[in-house]
Image (cartoon, rainbow, N blue to C red):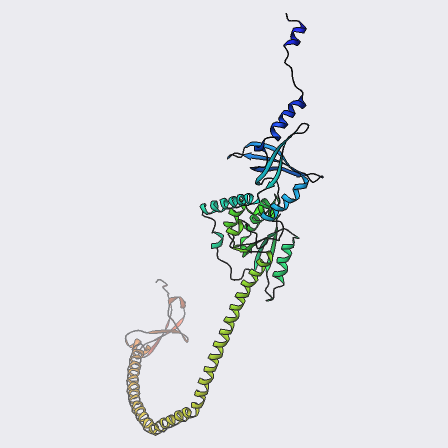
Length: 448
């Protein structure tokens, strides 16, 4: 068993932490490779403290977006303003989190505060190139998807008077657009509807997409869409370099006008929109000029119609004057022609009348003859009929009946036709064709 003294003897002799840190300090601070070295990295968690020092982390990500390297970094206050303005003046962007940068750094080690990377300088052209690369990648993707030109190929209304606006309510750019549109010198009337969205920062893409989705639900109410935002920091326009937003605009079913920022500002939306203008005011002016062109064309058509009507009226007047001058001679010619015809008709009237009268007289004679013949034949028929009736009446007369052997029995003045009219003891008179005889009824046989 080892004694306590043996254990103490076996323990290694250590150095102090400060001495160890001093070694590190000498190695790092004295290494030329770690001084003013240009490093490619991405900024993360960038913040400015009250003393004017800027602290951040420099990170590196692999192709899958996984962080593979990280180190804390600082820009001291006495150098921060120079680096900030150098970067902003060149790129139009504010140096901030999430940017790919090429920076000159020096590694330092402090015995108390540990290792720190100090940013001494920055190369803005690298960041500009990276931003352009990212924008070009989005444009290439839109081209490969076959949608980059879809919105530009949509037909425009002759006068886009119904305008859906995507902008921030109360923004200066929106106010400039409305003032320009409503105060146009041509007196054109426009129907506008604002679909409010956030036009800078992290909420830009989702709110603009929501606004476009709401417009898409009412496509029949609008002729075009205007996406506008006034001037400001170029960094505020980064959100418009979004594939999702650009793809939505490219495939939107109404023509889209983009008026974002200043003349120098270009975003991916400018490549896919049907019309790109430099400012909100220019967007309004473009719409006004399209209406003015249609109005000018309408005025030209009006002038053409008026001119055509004037020509027609002038020709009609000439024709009317010509026909008016011809009326007296034509009327005289017609009167003379018809006078001759009338004289001819008057001369022919006696001849025609005599002919008609002679024809009608002959016709009447023929009708008279036919009437006389008809009456004679009718009288003969009636005389024959009367003679037949007379013969029949003679044949059926009571006297002829008595002559054929029949007799007539009377009781008083009444003729007896049946035995039921007689009673025993009645005195009757029997009339014969010649003479009569009286008799008394003794017996009556009423059998049929």
